[in-house]
Amino acid sequence: MPAKPLDPSSPRALLGAELRVARERRDMSQAALGEKLFVSGSYVGQMENGTRRITLELATAIDQVLGTDGFFTRNCGKQGKSKYPEHFVEAAEAEAEARAIREYAPLVIPGLLQTEAYAREIFHAYQPTAPQAVIDELTEARLDRAKLLADPTTPLFWCVLDEAVIRRVVGGRGVMADALRHITGLIRARRIIVQVIRFSAGAHAALEGSLKLMAFEDAPPLAYVQGPETGLLLDDPATVTRHSLTYDLLTASALSPHESLALIESAAEEHAHDQHA
Image (cartoon, rainbow, N blue to C red; front, side, top):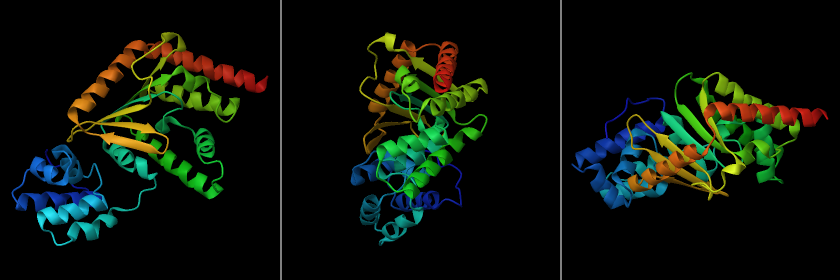
C-alpha cells in the first residue's frame, strides 16, 4: 500500500509512519506483520497510513514482534482520546479519511445528515438518564462529523434511506420537518445523493440492519455494520465485496434520486402541516 502524505499535526499518522519504518527495518511485508498480529495485511497498511488507530493491545504485540522496546506501547496513548463512543471510534476516523461513503439507514437519519435538534432527541432516547453535559458533548461531536460535507466535492456521500426514516417522528413534527428540509437542501445543492426505499418495495437485501461502505484513495475499502452499543469495521475483501453487492441491490430496489427528493420534500411538508394543525 503506498504511503500517503504525512500530516505532522496528526499523532496517529506520525505513529503509523513509525510503524512503517520499524516494519521495513525488519524487512517484513504488511502481510507478514499482519499474520503475527492476527490481522490482515491491509489492516497493517491502514494503521501505517493513519486510517486506523493502533490500539494498546496491538501496540504491545507490535513491540514484541518488531523488537521496538516498548515504543508503540508507550506512544499509542498519544494518538489522542476520541470524542466518539468506543465502538464507533475507528469507523469515525476512517470516515474522515474516505473519498466516498455509501450508507444504508433503516431507522434514523444518518449522523452526517442530522440537525442539532434531531441529534439531541436521538441521544436522549439512547441515554434517557444521562446528564445534559453528556448529551451536549455527544451532539457536538456528531455535528463536528457533519462538517465533512462542508467540502463541495469530497467525500462523495450516497445514502439509501428506508421510508421509516422519513416517517418516524423524532422530536416532534417541527424537528422532523427541519431535519428533512436539511437533507433536501443538501440534495438540491448537489452535495449528496439520496434514495428512499418505500414500504411497498417489500423485502430487500438489507433488512437485517444498517450498512456503511467507505472507499479511500490509498487504502482498501472498508465496511461498517452497527448494532446497539456495538459496531464492526470490516476489511476482509470478500466480506466488503459482499456488502457492496448488498448496497447495489438496495439502490436497485429504491426510488430514483429525483423521485426520492420529491418524496422527502412531501414528507417534510406533511410534518410541517401536522405541526401547525
